[in-house]
Length: 271
Ligand code: SF4
Figure 1: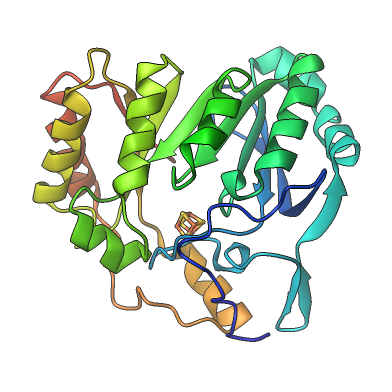
Figure 2 (figure 1 turned 120 degrees about the vertical axis):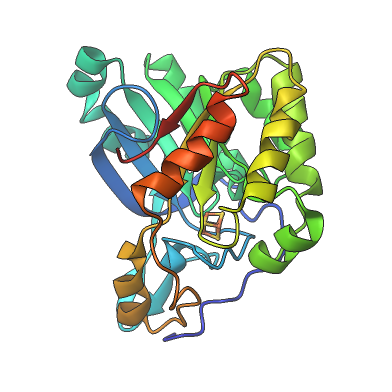
């Protein structure tokens, strides 16, 4: 389906209520997706349409053929657990574990719950990397069994959020409130996209939004890289960031300082 993968439905919060899940990649030895050495499981389907998405092949729901290549594979919970267990020695030695990413892992809630329960029974640390656009009931069921949420905040202005991601940020911000109230361990991830999210006004709005919490969450900044451009070419998707330059170190440091000056603990991912 070259170039026709955009079958996202912005109001669709979940697709999969079964014990099988669709995974499009399993990346071993990840060091940026939570503590220690981790296995990152990339789950297929995402209701957002971020213009800078690094995994455009992940966004449509279901297994599909793009440019002659199958993207996505169905797994039973026990099959996936077996894959995750293969790296147990590295988790044990580094304080690592498994991170469920995507796409949007909360789009496959029953499968996600099932695999996390199995991992927890096996003593494996579990993190979820989410854009937060899901029903609160799904978070309710996951907070007791998930060790860490890596939670994306992109834009505070609702009009800009809708313009650049195709969905409202109302539920996303409400769900973050809900997680914080429930004292769940959270790291907020903020993609620094030139001229879109990486502008003073937005960064200050995010800082002010997070400042209202008694215990401010840790923040990880994710500077935009052009590395996904080749994927867009390979799969025949339209690349919407064509003229965007990467931020230089001084610009990244400037945005980091906006948070540091307000007492936040801020890291830059990939540095
Ligand atoms: S939330 Fe993540 S996976 Fe979904 S479109 Fe945005 S960047 Fe891509």
